[in-house]
Amino acid sequence: KQEVTQIPAALSVPEGENLVLNCSFTDSAIYNLQWFRQDPGKGLTSLLLIQSSQREQTSGRLNASLDKSSGRSTLYIAASQPGDSATYLCAVNGGLSGGSNYKLTFGKGTLLTVNP
Amino acid sequence: GAGVSQSPSNKVTEKGKDVELRCDPISGHTALYWYRQSLGQGLEFLIYFQGNSAPDKSGLPSDRFSAERTGGSVSTLTIQRTQQEDSAVYLCASSPLLENTEAFFGQGTRLTVV
Image (tube, rainbow over the protein chains, first blue to last red):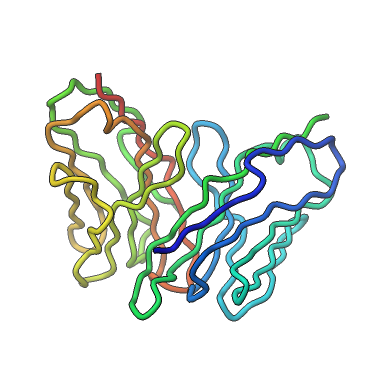
């Protein structure tokens, strides 16, 4: 069974800091990994998708890396802003070794607070 | 273009009643997922549909839960004889394919069973 863990559970930083959010997964036979953002009371907004064959993806101030063999991904946020405050979720697609499994398995998220 | 649309956005129901939650995926997306997010918990997989293939129902928590997808588009999640523990946000997502494509989520339906 695929399990996804996100560390830290919560993070509070001053505005302008660079920060790293971590995600690990137990079964490396994944199709892709996706990072989402969730604001309170809202749905999920997709930030970045990394295919299993890729090492990283970048979008603006966000950079996500993937080390499939070690079961790890990081989300790097540069020059953080108060508007970045949200819960960040990592999800892996697949991972049932020896069988097809397309469901997204989510971590519990990292609650980020960027203080002005 | 329109994103994933879910209705209603909020639903309050009495224990024991049946409820139906609706999801309109992005046009052309063949894969559709339902997830549940309980207060303070992570997202729990319920079911996915892919085209005309048999759905993966492995995440449905009990036989009170069922889902269908008509014409490969709109999906309805039905919860029969609701219980208080069914209270949660129910999220729907769609993607062009199951693998190697980005999943897009709706805003969710907040279900409260009283």
